[in-house]
Amino acid sequence: MKLLGWQWADGGWNCDKRPEASHSSFWESWTPLRALLTWRERAGSFPALDAAIEKSVQLFLQKRLFLRESSGEVMQPEFIRLSHPSYWKYDILVGLELMLLADRLSDPRCKPALELLESKMLADGAFCAEDKQFQASNPAAWHYSPVDWGSKSNYKLNRWLCICYLRSKLTVNYANARASAASKHRTGVASYAVFSFANNFLGIPLFPARSKRVQ
Image (cartoon, rainbow, N blue to C red; front, side, top):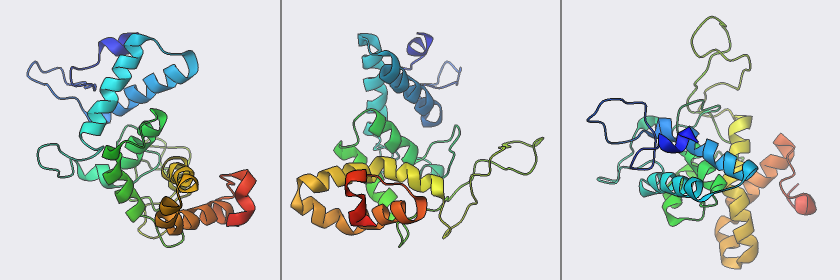
């Protein structure tokens, strides 16, 4: 598998061919990691694959998905602006989805990204697209998409971002809440808002057996 051979020493990937380059790029590392995780899920694992995935996962976790190790500052402003689809760009939601696929979302180093993501939730449990990586008006222009994924807004919900969030953060929160009364108390308000939003606005019964309780 050529992708394993192209992995950089720090666990990521980068198209920078300069001899002095030593650090991989989040923008160019998240898609290879997702590809490896998908391969393992669909075709099975082997030692070299598992080692490459773990090395890459650690690269993201060491930086808590969006923060510089040296100063704790945000690595790139784009990393904390949500968009959908993200295409090749990276943001905290992309990082959290990677950790979900890698079964590492419960790692304490995911907490800053999870808290930041939850802080962006609107009162009704929805999320806005804070950035936009496409345009749907001119097929001949750069970043054209035949699908309009929604507008950039500070208050208008973006259905796709809401679905991504539901798949990651609150499915884990809900499982934890069921196992712990204390956890349920802490996460109940936010969880109920998003579960209600899922059922009433998106039509997504996250947990069919209990869907009547959050109508």
